[in-house]
Length: 421
Ligand code: ADP
Ligand code: ASP
Ligand code: MG
Image (cartoon, rainbow, N blue to C red; front, side, top):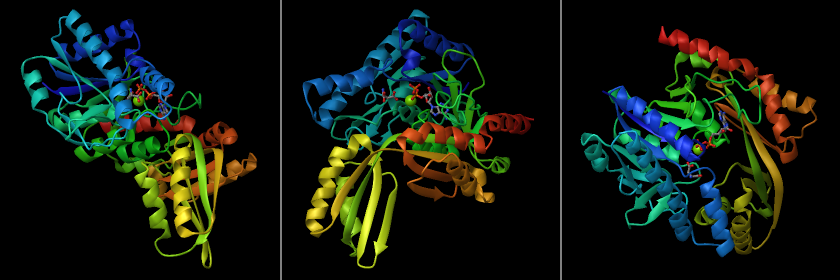
């Protein structure tokens, strides 16, 4: 008998019929003789609606109260899923993140899980019940409700799977969503994207960080760190899905495995500032203290003068403007420029480590389409280009095509079959 953690996303629990189908999935695993822990997101677009509601009450609600409000979405769905399970004759109990032992670091709106105290879950499983746990939330050491950042229910699921050591006991973490696996690009944006039978944690993490919404980045990190096999599957259709697993040598045969798009970026530039030691530290310390996640950073030097630019999500521009203006006041000279309407497209692949010419193929293809590139960043396994938002979807399709990604999924499927033989 193995233990499975099954996570159902917002669309998958969007209405009573879908909730019933999710409950049937859970029952199926139980009927096979396994233990199941369920993690659920808020129904449909509930979290967006709660944020919008808060905005109608206050222009800038405090992060604490926003977390208190957002966490209610998941409480609705856990209770309903537990009811649906009981109706099928499966004993179940709904739990908040705190009740399930998820301890967080206190950072409202973007908390990290610092520990999972698994006793309550173990007790419920031992009593033959299915714990149905609120995704996206935990309890800080101060007893405050924290949320884990948008899309964070995936992280709840993988963290619980790690705490319960499901991988060592023949189980895995199943991420049930509204797409039947991880594709070479978002299938909503690139219709000929192909489904991957397998992807490495490293590749999935990069894709998630670069905009592939299908998995929350920290969930992939937990999976890699604690060896949790993650199986991404469609919640309403039976299919093979995608396994996120450790890299195997043949994965390097594929140069690029996926492409991703991060929309709505803004670029903040501090121009003509003194090129003194410590100026970068001062700037990014102020930005970090304002709770802003910085994307790519660029610096150019002209002797004693420097310009530093960085990209952030559009939503953070107002806060970043305040923080950057204060830094300019402190350094005494320089000017602040903010550009909006940017996006980032990226390609990712473990195989880049052993193949050359990947970047040039991408730049040549974008150039031939007349798409200007405003900045480039690379790592061992990714290449990213910042460009105008108006070009983003076309650029994504071009990058997808130039690396033949519409066929890559099939070749990874063959690899998976070979690995299984
Ligand atoms: P859930 O509510 O189940 O957590 P999400 O909306 O967070 O679901 O994630 C699923 C969505 O991720 C899909 O509907 C798809 O549009 C998007 N997506 C982005 N990139 C990819 C990709 N590479 N493969 C599959 N889906 C992707
Ligand atoms: N309900 C949360 C959100 O919409 C968490 C999640 O769905 O993973 O971001
Ligand atoms: Mg999600």
